[in-house]
Amino acid sequence: MDEIKFTRCAVAFLDILGFKRFIEAAERSDSPEFLQFCELQDVIRRQLNFTQTGSAEMAGGEQHLFPEVVGLQVLHVSDSFILSAPVCNEACPV
Image 1 (cartoon, rainbow, N blue to C red):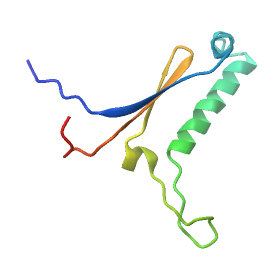
Image 2 (cartoon, one colour):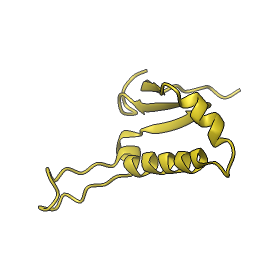
Image 3 (cartoon, rainbow, N blue to C red):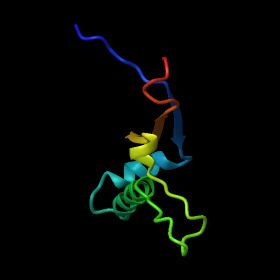
Image 4 (spheres, rainbow, N blue to C red):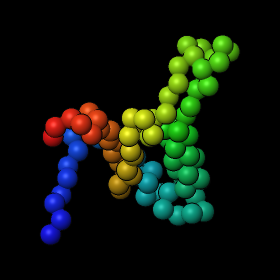
């Protein structure tokens, strides 16, 4: 049996008040909630993939590559979102 390797991560559990009713309504693909939920997922995905160019026109000139550099992952389970990211690099002992 292969050894299971764990990664030390910071985890955020996002439970939005009233979101359960919204998700239940979004289960019908013809509902306005379904379209709103698709938009919400798209916004989250775009924010996690956001890269600022660092040009003079951009405020601060910082660069961010969330999933690639930080390892941030988002999981949607039922009516909640779970975000996690490693708290140290691979050389860090568990």
